[in-house]
Image (cartoon, rainbow, N blue to C red):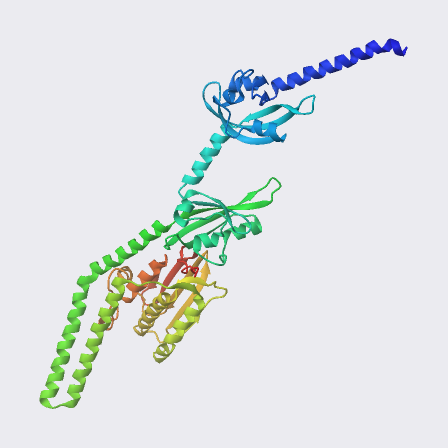
Length: 493
């Protein structure tokens, strides 16, 4: 029985082996990658269908000729290294397909052991990545040439990758902290969008002031977005920053042009004011001289006082005009808006009391600090409060008041000076910021509100007026917080 089953058993074993050989051949031929079997002479002894489709017939040809069209071995031949040490390898290679086109492929070199235990052949499995490389090149070109700063930042806030624009403007960046590269700081930024994105996984944006590799100030708006793994873990943050430096420069030039245009448009209006001052000087000289001639000391003293008053007017007008025309260098620092309100109110409290005017300060609740030119905003509020008190003095109402306040409103910082004085009609409101307009007669130069407008514009803000004749006025300054200038960055010593 046992002897009788042996032929059948042998036939089963043979059939199994034939089936396995057939299966191996089918897999070898139809696997979706190029396979070449190479001997120690670097001759291809077998290749599969995919190899023939890409590189043409390979059997009997040297591998360097079949893959790359070379007449001699590759300088860093992966097959030779595997024959030498028996280790498999993986590498990116560039070759030429059977149509003469450049092709990129990822090759796996695997040793094949012969009957004697030595490595008789190697198998090279190549995956065509030409299209992938083409897309990578396109994306890299886009990454490098996009007209904004693009950076990939790890959770240590170090830049692991950035585009050419970053290198051009800020210099070397690889492995350095973003705040050192962009701002020349030793410490991370207080409102770091990358850190916020790592914390909550959401996108964040904010405006920043940095320092380029030449030490010049740069302005940019940053958008930070998370880079996630398949399970939703944040590994890095990508920051895309739009360079606003040129825009800010043009804005400053526009402000300068508007200021000088205002000076040019209103210089003719100065003639009348100067003429009045000269007339006052002539009158003062007459009173002074006549007092001397007649020996009247009281008349001489009165003439001298008149001279001093008119000379002071000339000095004030000249200084104000110079200040308005040349502008100034703003010193921007983080400032408490409520403190500014209270300081200005304290400055005018006694003056208001002497004229029976109630002066009220409302610093607001929970008004956040803001980057402001403290002296400049103080001057703006001073000019507006002074005008408000004058408007109350010109009113017939016995119980006038002036209210100074600040508040946060829809992403903006708002200052208001409200009075219940004489108010202004439509024509007067239209003239307030167009020339050296004043309602104080010979007592004012009209330049205070022009200076106020200039300072507000330099902060990227707006100034508006609401007024009703006989009821009072509201002067309102609005600063969009995202447009406010930034404090000067702390330089690395």
